[in-house]
Image 1 (cartoon, rainbow, N blue to C red):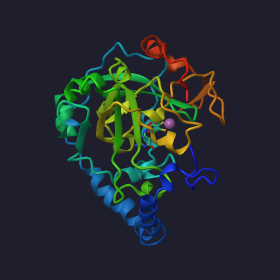
Image 2: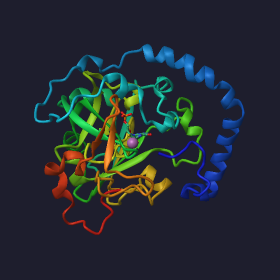
Image 3: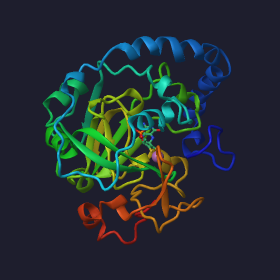
Length: 322
Ligand SMILES: Nc1nc2c(c(=O)[nH]1)N[C@H]1C(S)=C(S)[C@@H](COP(=O)(O)O)O[C@H]1N2
Ligand SMILES: [Mo]
């Protein structure tokens, strides 16, 4: 999306506060000094050992396929979906799958707080075991104009809301990714507003398509794809589908998402797919299919208009498509 250098044309809002300047100094020292020297060891040796440990919920897969979610195109070859990833916590290249093996996914504390009947911290693997797991085939469209079609395992996000019991005053679900400097080398890019944050309205989160991904290709979620739990919202650009969630907050305030904080002119809250609304720097009319590199036309709401278009009828003044 952006390069790994601090964009000279933009000062992220969070860099303007004194407190952040203080934290950033620590990170600069880490980045320039010892941190860099240790990267080969921390980035390659320890992760290999951790990668060997299977997920504690690995026995739950494959989950039964829900045939209501079928596709008009072939599935993407697994090797592409698992090795061409966006996960900025591990770096800004697409090749971070080996680095992501340093993520420690068990135990995984998931905090549920804000406007809920009772705030709670649960272990993600215990939660997954209680949820109605199924497999769905979904299209995925990255804002960078590449796409894939993959079999996700997981459960309807509605089931998570039923578990969390938000108050009627809650209007948004705000999700955060773990931000751990020890295991996530991408966090040394101090100019990004960590932790990664995303949000949906309650209406979006309870729409039947909104899915919590816990696996892919009939197996527990690989670390690089957002283990142990991530969001999957296929009618929106891929950056909305936040990985490795460790906090879910119910709020009456609309959150400012990670990419919106970095460059609000290019990335907004709604981010619904629309081939007719260009990104300020490129067209969204077509997409490159991972694996074949074929170019195919992009579809409004990524082809899911029947299920979701009604969510936006009263919101004509909003920037729905970026
Ligand atoms: N925490 C976090 N979540 C994230 C990202 C990220 O960098 N960090 N990248 C997003 C983007 S841009 C895309 S396209 C998808 C990619 O998911 P995949 O690697 O499983 O295909 O994850 C999204 N979720
Ligand atoms: Mo993306």
